[in-house]
Every structure is written in structure tokens, then in C-alpha cells.
Image (cartoon, rainbow, N blue to C red; front, side, top):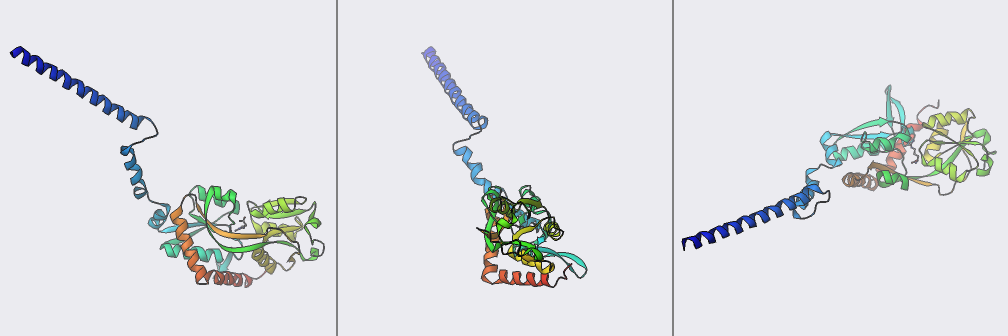
Length: 299
Ligand code: ARG
């Protein structure tokens, strides 16, 4: 009797031990699956994923936190953005700058401006050195792969600037066959010259004033830019004119470029752009920038 009880107890003990072993083996197998493989599944894995957005601050949060919005621009594009001496101080002004100031004000932060070559802007944005670009930049497919764009806030057509003395000589694209035509490095105007003036020779330079200088000194025969910019440069250089040369698909919009996958920032920028457009402010900024430019004495 005693023996039987003891034996039953022993068997129960062995069974219990066996069950514990099986359970612990299952447990460690589960743990291995979660930690070992890259793809984690199951409820245990969902928890950290669901918490992520709240834990990780967005770019918009970071900008507000830092108290400043870092704008990158290429200040060689009047009336969009350009340098002007104001009370003896070199200042960057233009309608893009006024829009950028309004964006910063709406975010409650200060605007910090960095002037660089147009062709370096998207790289600076991608590497996190700046938070946004306003530089009369036209959204296109290639750029949209690298950065996010706001809504378009302004549109302009493309024009060809030539020397006044050549206005009658260069009236069509054909008249520029075999000749040098300038466009800003990294700008869509390079593509326009390549596609629409394939028989001309493209000369690309980083800064637009250098191309204008080239045009005046007969290093290039024509320069392609957006119309308001053409008007600005011919205003300051009476020996230059807008030619009669007609370009196709010549409308280019300007939008704010922002780092890829920054939906909160895009939304905030679009809200400011919409407010400015509704209040007629964008048109006002364009007029003011154009006037500021015209008051400038030609070189
Ligand atoms: N709209 C043209 C582009 O996106 C030219 C812009 C040039 N802008 C400037 N700030 N230089 O390529």
C-alpha cells in the first residue's frame, strides 16, 4: 500500500517534470523565433511597432523644438530670390523668401537662410543640412523620387534671352543651330535646351549671373530662364532682350521641396501656402520683389 502510493507519487512527479520540460522548450522556441529572425510576427512584436510614431519625433516636431527652420536657396534668381544691399548690408530678398518667412512664422520658429548653388540644393536637403528649399524649384518626376514637394505656389513660362543686337538674327530655335545656349546647372532649363534645341550646344554654369556675363561677352548666344527672371536681368542689362523664340511645354511651376517622407511638414507648408494665396499675399510678394529689383541700379 505504502509502496503503491509512493510509486504513484513518483510517476506523477515524473509526469509533472516532463510537462514542465515540454513547456519550457516551447517557451524558448518562441523566444528564439522572435529574437533570431528579422521578421517578427505575433502580438508580442506588434506592440513596439504601434508605439513607434508616438515615440519618434517627426521632422516637424524637431524643427519646432530647435526653434529654427533652415532654408536652402540659390539667390541668383530675381524676383524669386536675390541679393540686395539694404542699409549697407548684403541681404537676400525675393518672393520665395517672403513665403519662407511666412512658413517659419506659422511654425513659430526663426528662418535661417543658406545660399548655395542651385545644383547642390537637393543633396543638402537629403543629407539633412537644410529643412526646406524655396528656389523657384519646379517639381518633376526625378526630383520627386528624392524629395517631397508642396503644392505649386507660382507658375511661369520659359523664355530665351539674347543680346538686343541679335534680336532679329535669333528668332527661332533653328537660328541657334550649332551655337552655344546657356542654362543653369541642375535646372530644368538644361533639359529644355537638350530636348528642344538638340542642335545647339548646351553651356551649364552654377550661377546664373555668370551665364548672363557670358551672354554679354558673346561666350553664349542665348540663355533660357523663367520669364520673370528674364525680365529682371534685361531690366538690369539694357543690352539684353527677351527673344521671339518660342519654346514648347514651357510652363514651370514652383513648389517647396522638403525631405522625403515628411508628411507633417508638407501639410504645414501647404496650409501656409493656401493661407497666403487666399489672402492675395503671394501676388503681393511678387509685386514687391519685382519693385525692389527694379529700384536696383543696373550694373
Ligand atoms: N525652375 C527651374 C528649375 O526648377 C529653375 C530654378 C532656378 N532657381 C534658382 N534659384 N536659380 O529647375
